[in-house]
Length: 113
Image (cartoon, rainbow, N blue to C red; front, side, top):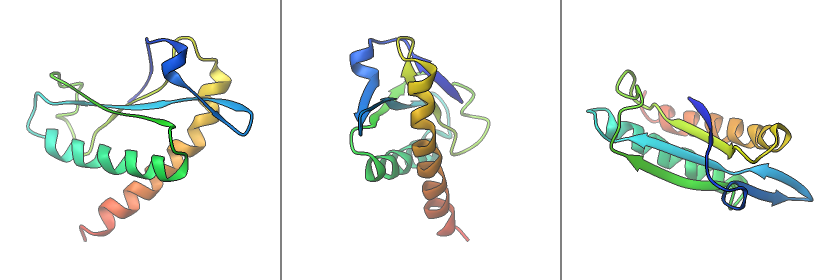
């Protein structure tokens, strides 16, 4: 589930090689039974993202909500940038998020076979 955050640009922007990127925040709802598996997956996503571009992740925020994350284990809400970031800045971050998702998926599910 992809969103943009409503906080200031100073919190949602990173610089890399002269380009601005929208920083990435993972949000996990904790008011349901799948909370543990979602949190484990989000932790892995954050680890992979940080290994690619240190500082691109804004971390993991846990909220006392559900966000439909009870429908499937390993669900994560992802906020890329914020309302003050341009679409270009957000799109600059997407390849790094995609790589982190691919790495996390491989590492997370490879050990479950």
